[in-house]
Image 1 (cartoon, chains in turn brown, red):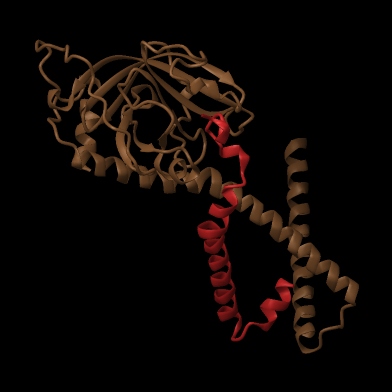
Image 2 (cartoon, one colour):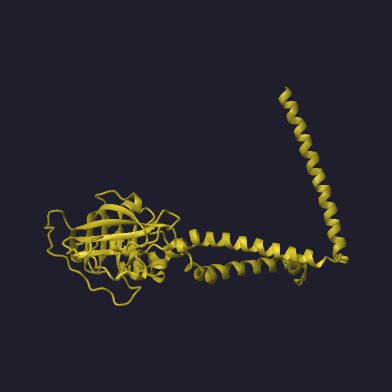
Length: 282
Length: 56
C-alpha cells in the first residue's frame, strides 16, 4: 500500500513537471516570436564564442562520422567491390565446377605456377578459407598499396612468390576496415585448409601457426619466413594483417604450407566446390 | 552561426527545413565520398602490411 501511494505521488510529480515544461515552452515560443520582430543585438564576444563553440561541435560530429565511415561504410563499399571482382574472375575461369570423383588419381605432378601479373591491381585469383565461413571467398590482387588493399581484399606482396611456387607466397589484408578480409585470422587452427584458385588450378595450403610481430619485421616475407639466406624447399603461404583488432601496433602473421595441387581441369576440391559454383553463377 | 544561416535561408519554415536537410546531406556525401577516403591515407591504424618500403 505504501509503495503504491509513493507511486501515485511520483506520477503527480511528473505531471506537474510536464505541465511546467510546456509552460516554459510556450513562453519560449512567445519570446521567439518577439525576437523575430526585433532581435536584441548580441555582443561581439558572445557571438565569437558561440561560433567557435558551434565549429568545435561540428568538428566532433565530423570525427564521429569518420569513425562510422571507416568502420562501417568502407566494409560495405569494399565487400561490393570484392564480390564483383570474385564473380568476374569466376566467369572468366575455364574448368569444370564439379569436383572429380574420389577414385581418380590425385597426384598431378609439380604445380603449375602462373607468371606474376605485371600491373598492380590485377585480380588473378580467389582465396577460400572455410574457417572464416562457408562462403568466404575473396579476390587475390597484385600489390599491397592502399589502392589495392582498400578495395580488393588480399594483396600479394610483389617481392614474394606466386601461389604454388617453392618459396613464400605472401598476402596482406585488412583486419577491420575495407572488407575486413582477415578479421578472423586469429581463429585459424593448425590443419585448417586455405584454398587458392588461379586460372591454372587450385592450391591447397594448410595453416601451420601464427605469430605476432612488430610492423617493422619484414623478414616474415623471406622465401623461408624469418630465415635469411635459407634456400626454400617448401611452398609457404604467409598472410599478414593488423594486430590487435582496431589497432595497428603489431602485425599478426599466419603461416601455411602447401599440401596439394590440382589443375583447373580436375575441378575444385570438394570442400569449396559449392562456393566455386556459387561464385561462377554471380 | 547555424542559427544565423537558418534565419537567412529564403522561403517559409518548411522550405527552410528542407533546404537545411539538403545542405546537411550534401555535406555528409562530400565527406564520405571525397574527404574521408583522402583522410584515410594518413590513418596509421588501417595499415596491415609489413616491412614498409624498406622491404627488399
